Length: 197
Image (cartoon, rainbow, N blue to C red):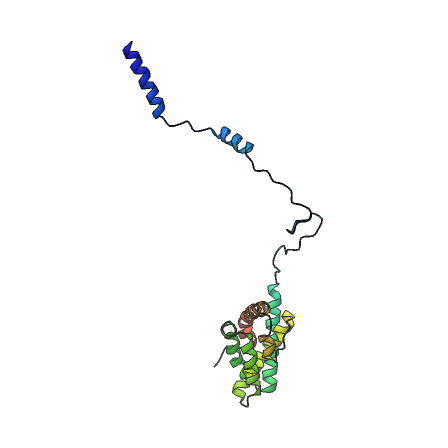
């Protein structure tokens, strides 16, 4: 008999040393479903905005996408205007120099911004030397084309209108001008000829 008691005592001690049994997934799910937090509706006169199902969504569904062909058309027409003005006001020899200048336009705007481009345009157009006047013509045509393309609220001949634009509007305009300058750079050789310093 003494042996049986020992074995029963050993069984009891083994049960006490064992880890408790984990609940099954089913038991856990039932436990959480029974303890879900309750939500109460907001009072009618709350200051928090509530969505109305009958009102239209005021958030834009997707960003506006521009037709890349419009960039190409603007660039091609702008460079054609540059070529005509250079040929008429100076000589056709300046077209190749203008081609080189146009190809550097993206880097110029990225580094210095549109307001400096406008300031340089005035400086070069008012200069006496023909070596710099062609730069003023290129910058002027580019800024005029940018204004019509963007419907921007600035005067291409007055850099202070660019400086006084709200930051967000100026940043968007600057970004658009960089994209337009890239397109001008692409078409420069085709319209103005191979670049020459």
